[in-house]
Amino acid sequence: MDVGVRCVVSGRVQGVWFRGATRDKALHLGLRGYANNLPDGRVEVLACGEKAAVARLRAWLWEGPPQAYVTEVECDAVAVPAGLTGFSTG
Image 1 (cartoon, one colour):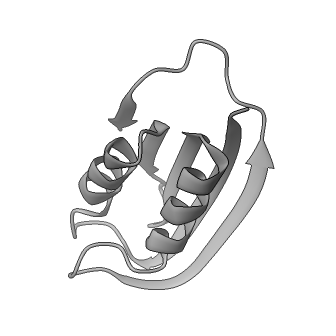
Image 2 (image 1 turned 135 degrees about the vertical axis):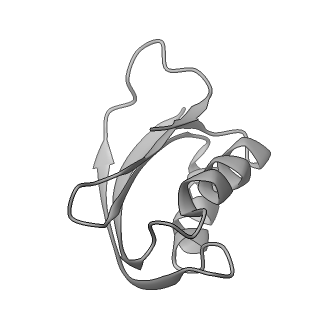
């Protein structure tokens, strides 16, 4: 059964290819969802898929790409949206 999680990542996470790296990692893990910049400088990530893969992405969000500096990752379980496919960046 698939699970869903919505995470908000704080720190130096915009302008450092965080969304693109998150998309690449998520697709490698077989996840669906998105990574979007928020107006306040944080990045919102929705990840849906196999429980262990979602957990691996959650852990990776604390690292991000080499140029990022992550100070906080807040995650909440969410329902998996019907018809969700792929992984986008907004």
